Structures are given as C-alpha cells and as structure tokens.
Amino acid sequence: MMTSVRQFDHQGHQITIATTYRIEVDGRPIHLHMLIDDAGQVHSHYAPFTHYTSAVDLVKDLLTRHPDLLKGHTNHRQKIKTKRDRKPKHRHSTRGNRP
Image (tube, rainbow, N blue to C red; front, side):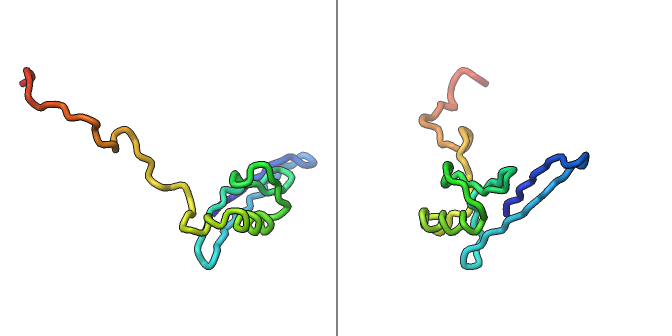
C-alpha cells in the first residue's frame, strides 16, 4: 500500500490531500514504488524519466515493460545482511595469554 500526501495553501487555507493506492495483480499486492507530484502526475523509480497522468497508465506500462515484477517481487523488505550476520573469514584462537 502506498500513500501520497500533498499539501498546499489556497486562499488562506492549508489543504492536505492524502491518496492511498493498493495495487493488486491477480489478487496479490504488488509495490511499484510510486510517487505523486504536486501536479498529480505519477512516477516510479522503475521508469525514472517517465511521467504518467494516472496510476492506471503507470501500472499498465510498468507491467508491460517489466514483466519480472510479477515474479514474486512485491517489495524491498528482504533481509539485508549486516557485518554481524556474515560468517567470519577466519577464526581466532580461544587459547592465549588471556584468563
């Protein structure tokens, strides 16, 4: 699910527009990393130099250009290995001069 929040002033009033998108393909949610600018155009980092006038146009184009998006890739929440998660390249001896 993706929520876009746009805020602006108009005639002395603070306006907030929050739009939530939940995109599903064949009943399965898919995350396309969408952004909505202040003009209402839709963008995605999958097509960084392309602007869409609607979320429908974005979804159709991205799934046509990147069919691999449907192969189980729904987000970037895969575990990222940290230095602590990696196996040591060598072992330190437990023997030595320390008590």
